[in-house]
Image 1: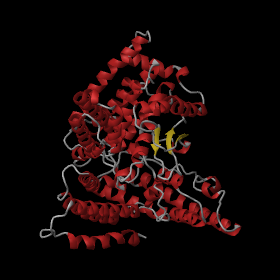
Image 2: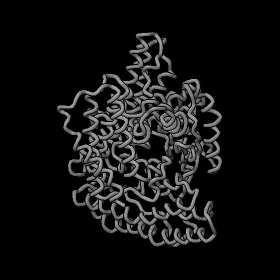
Image 3: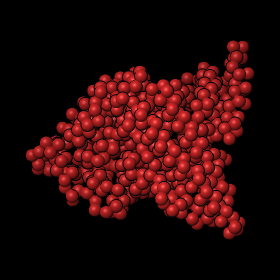
Image 4: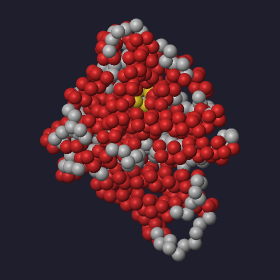
Length: 602
């Protein structure tokens, strides 16, 4: 399987070696550069789907439905070779592009994306292949949501994937052992155990569920054969592999976890954290200390706004006293899971969505559902989003953990719905999916935490312009979530650079927000596990607000909020790219007094 997976590298590598000497090559015209670039993007994307078959399945490409990604050290070495070859080709083409052209934008983004992937491997980040944030079980259950089972072959492909899990787990253990060898290990707060119940009847397993009611096969005999093979794959491959990983983490890896909770306790820990910040913020110039200071300033500013809301409600309390009272006020919490989920669905459908055309050109045609996080996976985030499949066979999903209703206050509903749903993550992913003539790598491979999470936090802010925070408790809920993101900047840098303890981080979050203790403890463990990512929310939101303020200031009455949002959402990627496109919009509109389609990238 591995040989087939990487055969494309060997072939493409030979082509690249032949084409590397361009010293005597004639200059290319714009159409040639565009055509060669698009061919390279297509080539890269096809290899990416071969490398990551799970991604292919999620995007509706079924060519590799019987395979799983390789985590072996050899695989990563081959990936580095591939990425470096693409980087060289892209840089050669980039030197031939016209300034300001769409091709230049695509190539520039391609180069940035490739460099990020190389930096990720070179930093040693790949030596943390799984954690409590993203376990193999979570990954497989997510994959099942997107797996199409319309014929016998697709069922056999799924069984083949189950049987490939032991190899993938062995490769993940190999990476963990390399981390032990090089002293790059996780904290003990990042450890996990599988939620698989070894005593459970196999037919009750979530991994057997797809085989309970098999359809679209030729005969009862084939149905029986599929079910027997699925049972064998789960009992003799899947469960033993998960148990092997559990045993390894408990008996071997736990003896080598890093000495402190922060990556600052690793060799070259500060450099590792700076890399992590750069990866998530796509900004190589900002320092941890600067991020920490921005967080402190935002906490102070938002606290003042929270105090104003408290006064408007007639209370003579500090922000902490009022937040503590809210935590104890049972009327501010849902009494059933069903009511919580129903409320979120109603708010999204009837309160938020009907108002979106006030601020956006159109509403993307992708379905959104709200579902509860399965109980056995409730150790993860309180809420998160999974994107729709391009063909709409799987809807975008806002996942809400309702296991502990003390973590689901009513005053958070509007803010969280706007963040995970519309116009937040669901809007953002759906918008870029519907763009025409945009390379697939831009739609599905470019990841910028600062853009994605920054947009979702900015989307929460738009609730003021849509009149959704008229209720002072909803307004306080929004501010509590906003200060929570500002606290993340303080706590994340505190843990990984300034030597904060876990309890110090928890106490700071409890003091400054209205979130429950349980949710805060889970959040702090997330920051310990995922250095730098938590800083992306506030950082990205502030950058988007800066872009908007600049556009409004320069353009005056010519500023069009719908046009501005369209430009932001169409340019999914690093904030530096987005800022350049906003500047083009400002310059073009200010010069001609109208918004011009010529500045669009699609």
